[in-house]
Amino acid sequence: MLRFFLSRLLSLVLSLAVASLVIFTVIEVIPGDPAAFMLGLNAEPEAVAALRAELGLQGGYIDRYLGWIGGLLAGDFGTSYTYRVPVAELVAARLWVSLPLTLYALALSTLIAIPVGVVAAARRGGAADYGIMGATQLGIAVPNFWFAMLLVLVFAIKLAWFPSGGFPGWDQGLWPNLKALTLPAIALALPQASILARVMRSSLLETLGQDYIRTARAKGLSRQAAVLKHALRNALIPVMTILGLQFSFLLAGAIIIENVFFLPGLGRLIFQGITQRDLIVVESVVMLLVFAVILVTFLVDLAYAAVDPRLRRAR
Amino acid sequence: MKLPGQLYVGAALSVVFIAAALLSLGWVPYSVEGMNIAERMQGPSAAYWLGTDQFGRDMLSMLMVGARTSIAVAIVAVGIGMAVGVPLGLLAAANRGGLVDEIVMRGNDLVFAFPSLVIAILITAVFGPSALNAILAIGIFNIPVFARVTRGGALSLWTLDYVLAARVSGKGKIRISAEHILPNIANLLIVQGTIQFSLGILAEAGLSYVGLGAQPPTPSWGRMLAESQTLISLAPHIAIFPGLAIVLTVLGLNLMGDGLRDLLDPRLRRVA
Image (cartoon, rainbow over all chains, first blue to last red; front, side):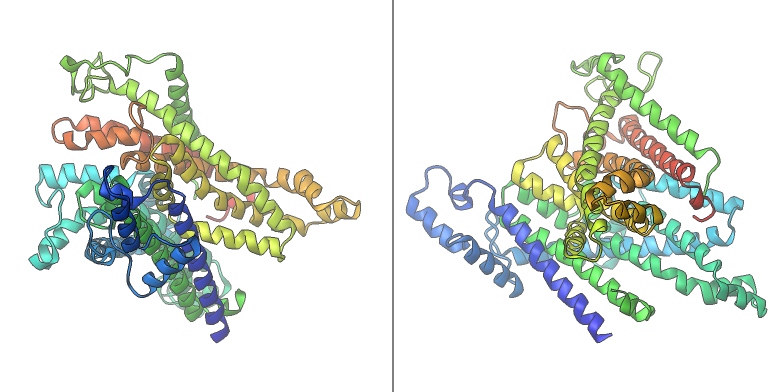
Protein backbone atom coordinates (compact mmCIF):
# COMPACT_ATOMS: atom_id res chain seq x y z
CA MET A 1 0.00 0.00 0.00
CA LEU A 2 2.87 2.37 0.86
CA ARG A 3 4.51 1.74 -2.50
CA PHE A 4 1.25 2.40 -4.27
CA PHE A 5 0.77 5.60 -2.30
CA LEU A 6 4.28 6.84 -3.10
CA SER A 7 3.99 6.09 -6.80
CA ARG A 8 0.67 7.95 -6.94
CA LEU A 9 2.15 10.84 -4.98
CA LEU A 10 5.08 11.07 -7.40
CA SER A 11 2.71 11.15 -10.33
CA LEU A 12 0.67 13.87 -8.57
CA VAL A 13 3.74 16.06 -8.10
CA LEU A 14 4.94 15.48 -11.69
CA SER A 15 1.51 16.32 -13.13
CA LEU A 16 1.39 19.53 -11.12
CA ALA A 17 4.90 20.52 -12.19
CA VAL A 18 4.15 19.96 -15.90
CA ALA A 19 0.74 21.62 -15.67
CA SER A 20 2.19 24.70 -13.98
CA LEU A 21 4.92 24.93 -16.65
CA VAL A 22 2.31 24.73 -19.41
CA ILE A 23 0.10 27.40 -17.84
CA PHE A 24 3.03 29.70 -17.12
CA THR A 25 4.43 29.33 -20.64
CA VAL A 26 1.07 29.94 -22.29
CA ILE A 27 0.50 33.11 -20.29
CA GLU A 28 4.09 34.21 -20.94
CA VAL A 29 3.67 34.16 -24.73
CA ILE A 30 0.95 36.77 -24.52
CA PRO A 31 2.29 39.93 -26.08
CA GLY A 32 2.06 43.13 -24.06
CA ASP A 33 3.47 44.35 -20.78
CA PRO A 34 0.96 44.42 -17.92
CA ALA A 35 2.86 47.22 -16.20
CA ALA A 36 2.69 49.45 -19.28
CA PHE A 37 -0.96 48.48 -19.72
CA MET A 38 -1.83 49.48 -16.14
CA LEU A 39 -0.11 52.85 -16.25
CA GLY A 40 -1.44 53.91 -19.66
CA LEU A 41 0.25 55.30 -22.75
CA ASN A 42 1.83 58.38 -21.20
CA ALA A 43 3.61 56.64 -18.34
CA GLU A 44 7.24 57.47 -17.54
CA PRO A 45 9.60 54.57 -18.36
CA GLU A 46 10.93 54.74 -14.76
CA ALA A 47 7.43 54.34 -13.35
CA VAL A 48 6.80 51.33 -15.61
CA ALA A 49 10.11 49.79 -14.55
CA ALA A 50 9.28 50.35 -10.88
CA LEU A 51 5.87 48.73 -11.30
CA ARG A 52 7.42 45.82 -13.18
CA ALA A 53 9.69 45.24 -10.22
CA GLU A 54 6.75 45.48 -7.82
CA LEU A 55 4.73 42.95 -9.82
CA GLY A 56 7.67 40.56 -10.04
CA LEU A 57 7.92 40.85 -13.82
CA GLN A 58 11.68 41.29 -13.90
CA GLY A 59 14.25 38.61 -14.48
CA GLY A 60 14.40 35.69 -16.86
CA TYR A 61 11.80 33.07 -17.64
CA ILE A 62 13.11 30.53 -15.15
CA ASP A 63 13.48 33.09 -12.34
CA ARG A 64 9.93 34.30 -12.79
CA TYR A 65 8.55 30.77 -13.01
CA LEU A 66 10.30 29.79 -9.81
CA GLY A 67 9.14 33.02 -8.18
CA TRP A 68 5.55 32.29 -9.17
CA ILE A 69 5.66 28.68 -7.98
CA GLY A 70 7.42 29.64 -4.75
CA GLY A 71 4.71 32.22 -4.13
CA LEU A 72 1.93 29.71 -4.85
CA LEU A 73 3.42 27.23 -2.40
CA ALA A 74 3.61 29.95 0.26
CA GLY A 75 0.01 30.99 -0.45
CA ASP A 76 1.09 34.18 -2.24
CA PHE A 77 -0.69 34.27 -5.60
CA GLY A 78 0.71 37.66 -6.61
CA THR A 79 -1.05 41.01 -6.91
CA SER A 80 -3.99 41.59 -9.23
CA TYR A 81 -3.07 44.14 -11.92
CA THR A 82 -6.48 45.76 -11.91
CA TYR A 83 -7.71 45.46 -8.32
CA ARG A 84 -4.28 46.08 -6.79
CA VAL A 85 -5.05 43.56 -4.03
CA PRO A 86 -3.51 40.12 -3.44
CA VAL A 87 -4.96 37.53 -5.81
CA ALA A 88 -5.18 35.11 -2.89
CA GLU A 89 -7.75 37.41 -1.26
CA LEU A 90 -9.85 37.60 -4.42
CA VAL A 91 -9.68 33.85 -4.89
CA ALA A 92 -10.52 33.08 -1.28
CA ALA A 93 -13.64 35.27 -1.43
CA ARG A 94 -14.81 33.69 -4.70
CA LEU A 95 -14.02 30.18 -3.56
CA TRP A 96 -16.74 30.48 -0.92
CA VAL A 97 -19.27 30.65 -3.73
CA SER A 98 -17.80 28.21 -6.27
CA LEU A 99 -16.86 25.43 -3.88
CA PRO A 100 -20.24 25.20 -2.07
CA LEU A 101 -21.95 25.30 -5.48
CA THR A 102 -19.80 22.46 -6.82
CA LEU A 103 -20.27 20.32 -3.71
CA TYR A 104 -24.01 21.00 -3.63
CA ALA A 105 -24.26 19.90 -7.27
CA LEU A 106 -22.09 16.83 -6.62
CA ALA A 107 -24.29 15.83 -3.69
CA LEU A 108 -27.48 16.29 -5.75
CA SER A 109 -26.03 14.34 -8.66
CA THR A 110 -25.04 11.42 -6.41
CA LEU A 111 -28.29 11.40 -4.44
CA ILE A 112 -30.34 11.31 -7.64
CA ALA A 113 -28.17 9.05 -9.77
CA ILE A 114 -27.44 6.13 -7.45
CA PRO A 115 -31.03 5.22 -6.51
CA VAL A 116 -32.20 5.85 -10.08
CA GLY A 117 -29.45 3.66 -11.51
CA VAL A 118 -30.18 0.89 -8.99
CA VAL A 119 -33.91 0.94 -9.79
CA ALA A 120 -33.19 0.78 -13.54
CA ALA A 121 -30.83 -2.18 -13.07
CA ALA A 122 -33.20 -4.00 -10.71
CA ARG A 123 -36.11 -3.55 -13.12
CA ARG A 124 -33.99 -4.31 -16.20
CA GLY A 125 -36.07 -4.36 -19.37
CA GLY A 126 -39.18 -3.13 -17.56
CA ALA A 127 -41.12 0.07 -18.05
CA ALA A 128 -39.18 1.87 -15.29
CA ASP A 129 -35.89 0.93 -16.95
CA TYR A 130 -36.98 2.24 -20.36
CA GLY A 131 -38.35 5.41 -18.78
CA ILE A 132 -35.17 6.06 -16.81
CA MET A 133 -32.86 5.30 -19.75
CA GLY A 134 -34.89 7.57 -22.04
CA ALA A 135 -34.82 10.37 -19.48
CA THR A 136 -31.06 10.06 -19.00
CA GLN A 137 -30.48 10.18 -22.79
CA LEU A 138 -32.35 13.47 -22.74
CA GLY A 139 -30.48 14.67 -19.64
CA ILE A 140 -27.13 14.12 -21.33
CA ALA A 141 -28.20 16.12 -24.38
CA VAL A 142 -29.40 19.19 -22.46
CA PRO A 143 -26.84 22.01 -22.20
CA ASN A 144 -26.70 22.94 -18.51
CA PHE A 145 -26.83 26.70 -19.09
CA TRP A 146 -30.00 26.36 -21.15
CA PHE A 147 -31.56 24.15 -18.50
CA ALA A 148 -30.57 26.86 -16.02
CA MET A 149 -32.43 29.47 -18.08
CA LEU A 150 -35.54 27.30 -18.15
CA LEU A 151 -35.32 26.80 -14.38
CA VAL A 152 -35.15 30.58 -13.95
CA LEU A 153 -38.14 31.05 -16.25
CA VAL A 154 -40.30 28.57 -14.32
CA PHE A 155 -39.11 28.68 -10.70
CA ALA A 156 -37.85 32.25 -10.41
CA ILE A 157 -39.96 34.32 -12.81
CA LYS A 158 -43.29 32.44 -12.98
CA LEU A 159 -43.44 30.79 -9.54
CA ALA A 160 -41.03 33.10 -7.66
CA TRP A 161 -39.87 30.24 -5.42
CA PHE A 162 -36.18 31.01 -5.86
CA PRO A 163 -34.19 34.15 -6.73
CA SER A 164 -33.25 34.42 -10.42
CA GLY A 165 -29.66 35.33 -9.64
CA GLY A 166 -27.20 37.00 -7.31
CA PHE A 167 -25.69 35.84 -4.06
CA PRO A 168 -26.50 37.39 -0.68
CA GLY A 169 -23.22 36.44 1.05
CA TRP A 170 -22.64 34.01 3.90
CA ASP A 171 -23.04 36.72 6.57
CA GLN A 172 -26.75 36.74 5.65
CA GLY A 173 -27.24 33.27 7.11
CA LEU A 174 -27.42 29.83 5.57
CA TRP A 175 -30.94 29.76 4.16
CA PRO A 176 -30.90 32.71 1.69
CA ASN A 177 -27.59 31.48 0.28
CA LEU A 178 -28.78 27.92 -0.01
CA LYS A 179 -31.81 29.23 -1.86
CA ALA A 180 -29.62 31.25 -4.19
CA LEU A 181 -27.46 28.21 -4.97
CA THR A 182 -30.31 25.71 -5.43
CA LEU A 183 -31.27 26.46 -9.05
CA PRO A 184 -27.61 26.69 -10.17
CA ALA A 185 -26.83 23.41 -8.42
CA ILE A 186 -29.80 21.64 -10.02
CA ALA A 187 -28.78 22.94 -13.46
CA LEU A 188 -25.22 21.69 -12.93
CA ALA A 189 -26.26 18.35 -11.46
CA LEU A 190 -28.84 17.18 -14.02
CA PRO A 191 -26.54 16.26 -16.94
CA GLN A 192 -23.98 14.73 -14.58
CA ALA A 193 -26.66 12.75 -12.75
CA SER A 194 -27.80 11.34 -16.11
CA ILE A 195 -24.32 10.08 -16.89
CA LEU A 196 -23.81 8.75 -13.38
CA ALA A 197 -27.14 6.91 -13.36
CA ARG A 198 -26.20 5.13 -16.60
CA VAL A 199 -22.83 4.11 -15.18
CA MET A 200 -24.49 2.92 -11.96
CA ARG A 201 -26.98 0.83 -13.93
CA SER A 202 -24.50 -0.90 -16.21
CA SER A 203 -22.02 -1.45 -13.40
CA LEU A 204 -24.68 -3.03 -11.19
CA LEU A 205 -25.93 -5.21 -14.05
CA GLU A 206 -22.42 -6.47 -14.65
CA THR A 207 -21.91 -7.24 -10.96
CA LEU A 208 -25.25 -9.02 -10.75
CA GLY A 209 -24.02 -11.43 -13.43
CA GLN A 210 -21.09 -12.56 -11.26
CA ASP A 211 -20.87 -16.01 -9.71
CA TYR A 212 -20.79 -14.83 -6.12
CA ILE A 213 -24.19 -13.20 -6.57
CA ARG A 214 -25.55 -16.49 -7.83
CA THR A 215 -24.05 -18.16 -4.78
CA ALA A 216 -25.65 -15.58 -2.50
CA ARG A 217 -29.01 -16.18 -4.17
CA ALA A 218 -28.53 -19.95 -3.99
CA LYS A 219 -27.98 -19.84 -0.27
CA GLY A 220 -31.41 -18.27 0.01
CA LEU A 221 -30.85 -14.52 -0.08
CA SER A 222 -33.67 -12.52 -1.62
CA ARG A 223 -32.90 -10.66 -4.83
CA GLN A 224 -33.18 -7.35 -3.00
CA ALA A 225 -30.74 -8.42 -0.30
CA ALA A 226 -28.31 -9.72 -2.92
CA VAL A 227 -28.41 -6.39 -4.70
CA LEU A 228 -28.08 -4.22 -1.62
CA LYS A 229 -25.66 -6.30 0.47
CA HIS A 230 -23.35 -7.87 -2.10
CA ALA A 231 -23.63 -6.26 -5.52
CA LEU A 232 -23.95 -2.58 -4.71
CA ARG A 233 -20.63 -2.22 -2.94
CA ASN A 234 -18.70 -3.74 -5.82
CA ALA A 235 -20.73 -1.89 -8.41
CA LEU A 236 -19.86 1.42 -6.78
CA ILE A 237 -16.20 1.21 -7.84
CA PRO A 238 -16.67 2.43 -11.43
CA VAL A 239 -19.19 4.93 -10.11
CA MET A 240 -16.45 6.42 -7.96
CA THR A 241 -14.17 6.99 -10.96
CA ILE A 242 -16.92 8.82 -12.77
CA LEU A 243 -17.68 10.79 -9.62
CA GLY A 244 -14.05 11.89 -9.48
CA LEU A 245 -14.17 12.95 -13.14
CA GLN A 246 -17.45 14.74 -12.53
CA PHE A 247 -15.85 16.95 -9.94
CA SER A 248 -13.76 18.55 -12.67
CA PHE A 249 -16.74 18.81 -15.02
CA LEU A 250 -18.80 20.43 -12.28
CA LEU A 251 -16.05 22.86 -11.40
CA ALA A 252 -15.67 23.85 -15.05
CA GLY A 253 -19.44 23.83 -15.54
CA ALA A 254 -19.78 26.14 -12.56
CA ILE A 255 -17.78 28.72 -14.53
CA ILE A 256 -20.61 28.88 -17.08
CA ILE A 257 -23.49 28.51 -14.66
CA GLU A 258 -22.15 31.34 -12.48
CA ASN A 259 -22.63 33.57 -15.51
CA VAL A 260 -26.28 32.59 -15.87
CA PHE A 261 -27.04 33.40 -12.23
CA PHE A 262 -24.63 36.33 -11.76
CA LEU A 263 -22.90 34.48 -8.93
CA PRO A 264 -19.63 36.09 -7.79
CA GLY A 265 -17.54 32.91 -8.04
CA LEU A 266 -14.24 31.86 -9.59
CA GLY A 267 -15.79 31.69 -13.05
CA ARG A 268 -16.76 35.34 -13.03
CA LEU A 269 -13.32 36.19 -11.68
CA ILE A 270 -11.66 34.41 -14.63
CA PHE A 271 -13.83 36.17 -17.20
CA GLN A 272 -13.20 39.55 -15.61
CA GLY A 273 -9.49 38.72 -15.62
CA ILE A 274 -9.61 37.92 -19.34
CA THR A 275 -11.50 41.07 -20.36
CA GLN A 276 -9.33 43.32 -18.19
CA ARG A 277 -6.16 41.45 -19.23
CA ASP A 278 -5.47 40.80 -15.56
CA LEU A 279 -3.38 37.79 -16.46
CA ILE A 280 -1.98 37.02 -13.04
CA VAL A 281 -5.56 36.37 -11.91
CA VAL A 282 -6.24 34.12 -14.92
CA GLU A 283 -2.96 32.29 -14.37
CA SER A 284 -3.54 31.66 -10.67
CA VAL A 285 -7.20 30.69 -10.93
CA VAL A 286 -6.51 28.27 -13.80
CA MET A 287 -3.66 26.73 -11.81
CA LEU A 288 -5.97 26.40 -8.81
CA LEU A 289 -8.66 24.65 -10.88
CA VAL A 290 -6.13 22.26 -12.42
CA PHE A 291 -4.67 21.58 -8.97
CA ALA A 292 -8.15 20.73 -7.67
CA VAL A 293 -8.75 18.32 -10.56
CA ILE A 294 -5.39 16.57 -10.18
CA LEU A 295 -5.83 16.34 -6.41
CA VAL A 296 -9.28 14.79 -6.72
CA THR A 297 -7.97 12.23 -9.22
CA PHE A 298 -5.23 11.35 -6.73
CA LEU A 299 -7.73 10.99 -3.87
CA VAL A 300 -10.01 8.81 -6.00
CA ASP A 301 -7.07 6.54 -6.81
CA LEU A 302 -6.30 6.20 -3.10
CA ALA A 303 -9.94 5.62 -2.22
CA TYR A 304 -9.99 2.83 -4.81
CA ALA A 305 -7.05 1.09 -3.31
CA ALA A 306 -8.68 1.35 0.11
CA VAL A 307 -11.94 -0.18 -1.16
CA ASP A 308 -10.43 -2.79 -3.45
CA PRO A 309 -7.06 -4.29 -2.48
CA ARG A 310 -6.73 -5.88 -5.95
CA LEU A 311 -6.14 -2.43 -7.43
CA ARG A 312 -3.11 -1.71 -5.25
CA ARG A 313 -0.86 -3.79 -7.47
CA ALA A 314 -2.51 -2.88 -10.74
CA ARG A 315 -0.44 0.18 -11.51
CA MET B 1 -29.44 -0.87 -23.37
CA LYS B 2 -31.27 -0.68 -26.64
CA LEU B 3 -34.14 1.72 -26.91
CA PRO B 4 -36.42 0.60 -29.73
CA GLY B 5 -35.40 2.01 -33.12
CA GLN B 6 -32.82 4.34 -31.62
CA LEU B 7 -30.52 4.10 -34.62
CA TYR B 8 -33.27 5.27 -36.97
CA VAL B 9 -34.54 8.03 -34.71
CA GLY B 10 -30.98 9.21 -34.11
CA ALA B 11 -30.04 9.08 -37.77
CA ALA B 12 -33.23 10.93 -38.75
CA LEU B 13 -32.59 13.74 -36.26
CA SER B 14 -28.96 14.02 -37.37
CA VAL B 15 -29.91 14.10 -41.05
CA VAL B 16 -32.50 16.85 -40.47
CA PHE B 17 -29.90 18.94 -38.68
CA ILE B 18 -27.19 18.45 -41.30
CA ALA B 19 -29.65 19.02 -44.14
CA ALA B 20 -30.82 22.29 -42.53
CA ALA B 21 -27.22 23.47 -42.30
CA LEU B 22 -26.48 22.52 -45.92
CA LEU B 23 -29.72 24.09 -47.14
CA SER B 24 -28.80 27.35 -45.39
CA LEU B 25 -25.75 27.64 -47.65
CA GLY B 26 -28.03 28.28 -50.61
CA TRP B 27 -31.38 29.29 -49.16
CA VAL B 28 -32.95 30.46 -45.91
CA PRO B 29 -36.59 31.52 -45.42
CA TYR B 30 -35.56 35.08 -44.51
CA SER B 31 -32.24 36.90 -44.59
CA VAL B 32 -30.46 36.86 -41.21
CA GLU B 33 -28.52 40.03 -41.92
CA GLY B 34 -31.12 42.79 -41.95
CA MET B 35 -33.11 43.97 -38.94
CA ASN B 36 -36.85 44.34 -39.04
CA ILE B 37 -37.79 46.12 -35.83
CA ALA B 38 -41.50 46.25 -36.68
CA GLU B 39 -41.64 42.45 -36.62
CA ARG B 40 -39.50 41.87 -33.54
CA MET B 41 -40.16 39.27 -30.82
CA GLN B 42 -43.16 37.76 -32.55
CA GLY B 43 -44.34 34.34 -31.48
CA PRO B 44 -44.52 31.47 -33.96
CA SER B 45 -46.92 32.13 -36.86
CA ALA B 46 -47.61 30.99 -40.43
CA ALA B 47 -45.15 33.56 -41.76
CA TYR B 48 -42.48 32.93 -39.12
CA TRP B 49 -42.70 29.28 -38.10
CA LEU B 50 -40.53 29.73 -35.02
CA GLY B 51 -41.21 33.44 -34.47
CA THR B 52 -38.73 36.31 -34.66
CA ASP B 53 -35.93 37.47 -32.36
CA GLN B 54 -35.29 40.83 -30.67
CA PHE B 55 -34.16 42.35 -33.98
CA GLY B 56 -37.07 40.95 -36.00
CA ARG B 57 -34.92 38.28 -37.64
CA ASP B 58 -36.57 34.95 -38.47
CA MET B 59 -35.66 32.39 -35.78
CA LEU B 60 -35.81 29.43 -38.17
CA SER B 61 -33.32 31.08 -40.53
CA MET B 62 -31.04 32.00 -37.62
CA LEU B 63 -31.12 28.41 -36.36
CA MET B 64 -30.32 27.05 -39.83
CA VAL B 65 -27.31 29.31 -40.20
CA GLY B 66 -26.30 28.61 -36.58
CA ALA B 67 -26.33 24.87 -37.34
CA ARG B 68 -23.57 25.54 -39.86
CA THR B 69 -21.36 27.07 -37.18
CA SER B 70 -21.99 24.16 -34.81
CA ILE B 71 -21.25 21.54 -37.48
CA ALA B 72 -18.13 23.29 -38.70
CA VAL B 73 -16.67 23.69 -35.22
CA ALA B 74 -17.54 20.15 -34.13
CA ILE B 75 -16.32 18.45 -37.32
CA VAL B 76 -12.97 20.22 -37.38
CA ALA B 77 -12.52 19.57 -33.66
CA VAL B 78 -13.18 15.84 -34.19
CA GLY B 79 -10.79 15.97 -37.17
CA ILE B 80 -8.01 17.44 -35.03
CA GLY B 81 -8.63 14.84 -32.32
CA MET B 82 -8.50 11.97 -34.83
CA ALA B 83 -5.59 13.29 -36.89
CA VAL B 84 -3.35 13.56 -33.84
CA GLY B 85 -4.89 11.11 -31.39
CA VAL B 86 -5.19 8.03 -33.64
CA PRO B 87 -1.51 7.95 -34.74
CA LEU B 88 -0.46 8.53 -31.12
CA GLY B 89 -2.68 5.68 -29.95
CA LEU B 90 -1.35 3.36 -32.69
CA LEU B 91 2.20 4.28 -31.80
CA ALA B 92 1.60 3.67 -28.10
CA ALA B 93 0.01 0.28 -28.78
CA ALA B 94 2.79 -0.76 -31.18
CA ASN B 95 5.36 0.02 -28.48
CA ARG B 96 3.19 -1.14 -25.59
CA GLY B 97 4.85 -0.99 -22.22
CA GLY B 98 7.74 0.99 -23.65
CA LEU B 99 8.86 4.55 -23.18
CA VAL B 100 6.77 5.94 -26.08
CA ASP B 101 3.67 4.30 -24.62
CA GLU B 102 4.38 5.80 -21.22
CA ILE B 103 4.96 9.31 -22.62
CA VAL B 104 1.80 9.22 -24.72
CA MET B 105 -0.37 7.99 -21.86
CA ARG B 106 1.04 10.45 -19.29
CA GLY B 107 0.60 13.27 -21.82
CA ASN B 108 -3.01 12.17 -22.13
CA ASP B 109 -3.50 12.27 -18.38
CA LEU B 110 -2.13 15.79 -18.37
CA VAL B 111 -4.60 17.06 -20.98
CA PHE B 112 -7.42 15.33 -19.09
CA ALA B 113 -6.41 17.29 -15.99
CA PHE B 114 -7.38 20.50 -17.76
CA PRO B 115 -11.16 20.69 -18.04
CA SER B 116 -11.88 21.56 -21.71
CA LEU B 117 -13.38 24.87 -20.69
CA VAL B 118 -10.18 25.78 -18.88
CA ILE B 119 -8.17 25.00 -22.03
CA ALA B 120 -10.56 27.25 -23.95
CA ILE B 121 -10.11 30.01 -21.40
CA LEU B 122 -6.33 29.78 -21.62
CA ILE B 123 -6.41 29.85 -25.41
CA THR B 124 -8.79 32.80 -25.45
CA ALA B 125 -6.73 34.66 -22.89
CA VAL B 126 -3.79 34.38 -25.28
CA PHE B 127 -5.31 34.69 -28.74
CA GLY B 128 -8.66 36.38 -28.08
CA PRO B 129 -12.13 34.85 -28.51
CA SER B 130 -13.09 33.43 -31.92
CA ALA B 131 -14.69 30.37 -33.48
CA LEU B 132 -11.24 29.19 -34.57
CA ASN B 133 -9.93 29.23 -31.02
CA ALA B 134 -13.02 27.38 -29.83
CA ILE B 135 -12.22 24.70 -32.42
CA LEU B 136 -8.65 24.48 -31.15
CA ALA B 137 -9.75 24.19 -27.54
CA ILE B 138 -12.29 21.45 -28.25
CA GLY B 139 -9.91 19.73 -30.68
CA ILE B 140 -7.05 19.56 -28.18
CA PHE B 141 -9.38 17.95 -25.68
CA ASN B 142 -10.37 15.35 -28.31
CA ILE B 143 -6.78 14.21 -28.84
CA PRO B 144 -6.42 12.14 -25.63
CA VAL B 145 -9.91 10.70 -26.12
CA PHE B 146 -9.02 9.27 -29.53
CA ALA B 147 -5.52 8.27 -28.42
CA ARG B 148 -6.99 6.26 -25.57
CA VAL B 149 -9.70 4.56 -27.64
CA THR B 150 -7.19 3.75 -30.38
CA ARG B 151 -4.63 2.36 -27.96
CA GLY B 152 -7.23 0.27 -26.13
CA GLY B 153 -8.61 -1.21 -29.33
CA ALA B 154 -5.18 -1.76 -30.87
CA LEU B 155 -3.71 -3.44 -27.78
CA SER B 156 -6.14 -6.34 -27.98
CA LEU B 157 -5.46 -6.78 -31.70
CA TRP B 158 -1.69 -7.00 -31.30
CA THR B 159 -2.06 -10.34 -29.53
CA LEU B 160 -4.11 -11.92 -32.33
CA ASP B 161 -2.78 -14.56 -34.71
CA TYR B 162 -3.16 -12.59 -37.92
CA VAL B 163 -0.99 -9.79 -36.53
CA LEU B 164 1.54 -12.40 -35.49
CA ALA B 165 1.43 -13.79 -39.04
CA ALA B 166 2.05 -10.31 -40.43
CA ARG B 167 5.06 -9.91 -38.15
CA VAL B 168 6.43 -13.27 -39.20
CA SER B 169 6.07 -12.24 -42.83
CA GLY B 170 8.43 -9.38 -42.06
CA LYS B 171 6.13 -6.36 -41.87
CA GLY B 172 7.23 -3.50 -39.60
CA LYS B 173 5.22 -1.98 -36.76
CA ILE B 174 4.09 1.01 -38.77
CA ARG B 175 2.95 -1.10 -41.70
CA ILE B 176 1.07 -3.52 -39.46
CA SER B 177 -0.59 -0.59 -37.66
CA ALA B 178 -1.73 0.93 -40.94
CA GLU B 179 -2.70 -2.26 -42.79
CA HIS B 180 -4.05 -4.53 -40.09
CA ILE B 181 -4.77 -2.60 -36.89
CA LEU B 182 -6.38 0.59 -38.20
CA PRO B 183 -9.03 -1.06 -40.41
CA ASN B 184 -10.06 -3.27 -37.50
CA ILE B 185 -10.57 -0.43 -35.05
CA ALA B 186 -12.42 1.75 -37.57
CA ASN B 187 -15.72 0.74 -35.93
CA LEU B 188 -14.58 2.01 -32.57
CA LEU B 189 -13.38 5.26 -34.10
CA ILE B 190 -16.63 5.87 -35.96
CA VAL B 191 -18.66 5.40 -32.78
CA GLN B 192 -16.31 7.57 -30.72
CA GLY B 193 -16.32 10.16 -33.51
CA THR B 194 -20.11 10.41 -33.32
CA ILE B 195 -19.97 10.86 -29.56
CA GLN B 196 -17.22 13.49 -29.73
CA PHE B 197 -19.15 15.26 -32.49
CA SER B 198 -22.15 15.64 -30.19
CA LEU B 199 -19.94 16.69 -27.27
CA GLY B 200 -18.31 19.22 -29.60
CA ILE B 201 -21.68 20.76 -30.38
CA LEU B 202 -22.45 21.06 -26.67
CA ALA B 203 -19.01 22.53 -25.97
CA GLU B 204 -19.28 25.03 -28.83
CA ALA B 205 -22.66 26.17 -27.54
CA GLY B 206 -21.24 26.62 -24.04
CA LEU B 207 -18.20 28.56 -25.24
CA SER B 208 -20.27 30.82 -27.49
CA TYR B 209 -22.70 31.35 -24.63
CA VAL B 210 -19.95 32.81 -22.41
CA GLY B 211 -18.54 34.80 -25.34
CA LEU B 212 -15.46 32.67 -26.02
CA GLY B 213 -16.72 31.10 -29.27
CA ALA B 214 -18.12 32.45 -32.52
CA GLN B 215 -18.24 36.26 -32.54
CA PRO B 216 -20.94 38.50 -34.01
CA PRO B 217 -22.20 38.65 -36.69
CA THR B 218 -21.74 34.85 -37.14
CA PRO B 219 -24.99 33.31 -35.87
CA SER B 220 -24.42 30.59 -33.30
CA TRP B 221 -26.83 28.70 -31.07
CA GLY B 222 -24.88 29.46 -27.92
CA ARG B 223 -24.78 33.19 -28.61
CA MET B 224 -28.47 33.26 -29.50
CA LEU B 225 -29.12 31.83 -26.03
CA ALA B 226 -26.82 34.37 -24.37
CA GLU B 227 -28.61 37.24 -26.11
CA SER B 228 -32.04 35.86 -25.28
CA GLN B 229 -31.35 35.60 -21.57
CA THR B 230 -32.58 39.05 -20.58
CA LEU B 231 -35.68 38.66 -22.78
CA ILE B 232 -36.74 35.28 -21.49
CA SER B 233 -39.77 36.52 -19.58
CA LEU B 234 -40.94 38.76 -22.46
CA ALA B 235 -40.48 36.29 -25.30
CA PRO B 236 -39.64 32.80 -24.03
CA HIS B 237 -39.58 31.34 -27.55
CA ILE B 238 -36.33 33.23 -28.30
CA ALA B 239 -34.66 31.25 -25.53
CA ILE B 240 -36.51 27.97 -26.00
CA PHE B 241 -35.96 27.22 -29.71
CA PRO B 242 -32.13 27.48 -29.86
CA GLY B 243 -31.94 25.25 -26.78
CA LEU B 244 -34.29 22.72 -28.36
CA ALA B 245 -32.15 22.74 -31.50
CA ILE B 246 -29.09 21.85 -29.41
CA VAL B 247 -30.93 19.16 -27.43
CA LEU B 248 -32.44 17.47 -30.50
CA THR B 249 -29.15 17.51 -32.40
CA VAL B 250 -27.11 16.15 -29.52
CA LEU B 251 -29.79 13.59 -28.70
CA GLY B 252 -29.88 12.49 -32.34
CA LEU B 253 -26.12 12.07 -32.55
CA ASN B 254 -25.96 10.20 -29.23
CA LEU B 255 -28.75 7.81 -30.22
CA MET B 256 -27.07 7.26 -33.57
CA GLY B 257 -23.72 6.61 -31.85
CA ASP B 258 -25.26 4.04 -29.51
CA GLY B 259 -27.17 2.44 -32.36
CA LEU B 260 -24.05 2.26 -34.52
CA ARG B 261 -22.12 0.63 -31.71
CA ASP B 262 -24.74 -2.09 -31.43
CA LEU B 263 -24.81 -2.52 -35.18
CA LEU B 264 -21.04 -2.60 -35.69
CA ASP B 265 -20.17 -4.67 -32.65
CA PRO B 266 -22.71 -7.43 -32.05
CA ARG B 267 -20.76 -8.62 -29.00
CA LEU B 268 -21.87 -5.52 -27.12
CA ARG B 269 -25.55 -6.15 -27.71
CA ARG B 270 -25.84 -8.42 -24.73
CA VAL B 271 -24.08 -6.21 -22.19
CA ALA B 272 -24.85 -2.50 -21.51
